[in-house]
Amino acid sequence: FMKYLRRGSGYYIDVGACELIADGSIKLAHGEVDRLTEDSVILADGTELPADVVVYATGFGSMNGWAADLISQEVADRIGKVWGLGSGTTKDPGPWEGEQRNMWKPTQQPNLWLHGGNLHQSRHYSLYLALQLKARYEGLATPVYGLQEVHHLS
Image 1: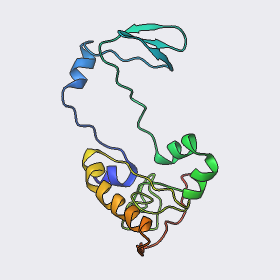
Image 2: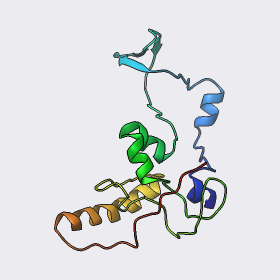
Image 3: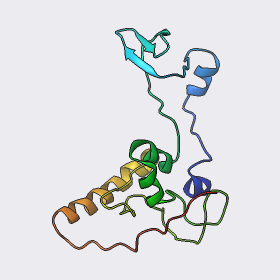
């Protein structure tokens, strides 16, 4: 679990899908989706894949990468490292900060808040994020420990 907190990796909870993928009951495809029909997926290269259910697995990537892709590299650079405790371990540069970097609190980019994590974290921290946003909307002082220093991976 600490590996997850420090670098957002380290575990996968299999609830049966692995075996279904291995035995071919669930098929995987990679490519840009052009459109969906009633019973298939049409990829950008024209490939048509019959499908009963489509699950968009957008990937498990860094929040920094998502910020760069969805907003801009400039904003991602301004925010710096997301996730991690500052443990000084691989992919978690120090110094120790003791709380998740740039998650569920203000970032170095004004008015940009990041929310993510597994189901438990999303359910738990969505309340605290919502309360902070509501308080700011209502003009209530909501001081935080401090904005995160900007750290980047080399």
